[in-house]
Image (cartoon, rainbow, N blue to C red; front, side, top):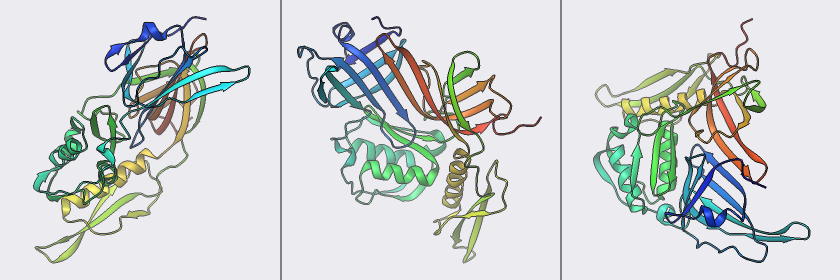
Length: 338
């Protein structure tokens, strides 16, 4: 059986595809938004024990049809034997080394610094080469930043919730990007994937009206020292059909922080609208936080969606597919105006 997709695998920077080709039977790559690590699995026919076990922590790169789809490190190498099923070796990899310093507590602080500076310091102390911070967040200034003893992973997750961001580690760098905007951490547009019926769409399971925003506005408050009173900041939530207000607990330090809290709740509420998945022919360019545009299905289903998860699957002799997890419908999705 021959592969129908062009693939390439590197280990510690060396192309080992030619050695793997007679033995590799399946490839699976998962790209998630948020803090979940990217993951990959390579499955080998290990009849006779001819496969060499890669060392844990070895760097792995996987390319499909010439597109880089995964960059991470070897995490585990489970081996199985079943009667009639043969001997299989799996090489499981994750987007970052879970045994590294990223989950080590940090105690330090910065005064009068930007968020970009603070995150970069935390990333380097976690053993990473640096941090890519969205321009919309990088210049945010506060008089005090500190992880206060928590790990880089936990602090990054906390800040992501506060600012409505996507935080994750890929390879030896971390990313802090705006959520639901279809932009990368450097402000460039993410790839757009298109699906057509009939065409490259294999199956669809979408409810574009599920999880619509339960609030019409997000509201935060802060204490204004000059007037000696609490001041409220409100932001409208797009797509909401209710008058209820999402009143954020606690108080912000100032107006800038209050607005960032409200913006984060707005982004998360808009993003959580709609839910579903689409399976299409292999689309290696698809990435979490990118855009999927569907056409040819029906009014109310056709439109654009935010990609929140991507799973590429390819196997020897069985073809290759991409499954997209979708949210945040737009451009007609969820509305049947006939």
